[in-house]
Amino acid sequence: MQVVNVHEAKTHLSRLLEIVERGEEVVIARAGRPVATLAVYRPGKRRIAPPGSLSGRDWRMGDDFDEPIDELFAAFQGEDTSPGGEAR
Image 1 (cartoon, one colour):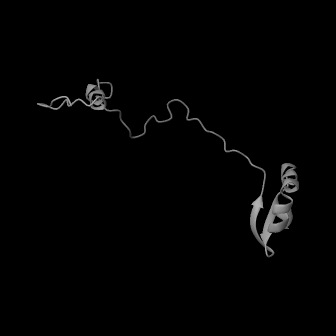
Image 2 (cartoon, helix red, strand yellow):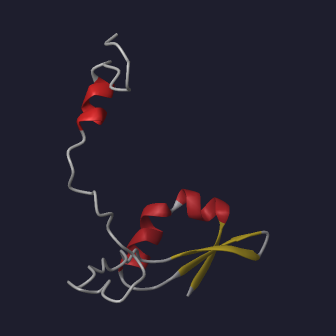
Image 3 (cartoon, rainbow, N blue to C red):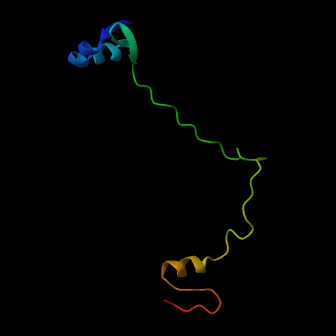
């Protein structure tokens, strides 16, 4: 592991990135005290939940989830669907 000060890190960033790409870590220090570690980037693994993974969990779909939502579309068109309401 190589330790460099902030000024050297700014001046030689490309060289330090080459070192990191080879698998080494570089510690960046300010006044001799470590501040940060420059390390190779490893993206997180995306985990996809398998089918049925929510089985047994406490959630329920509403009984009316597949009913028409004409009131919603009317609201976007500026219509009043309440009893006695008039279109705007």
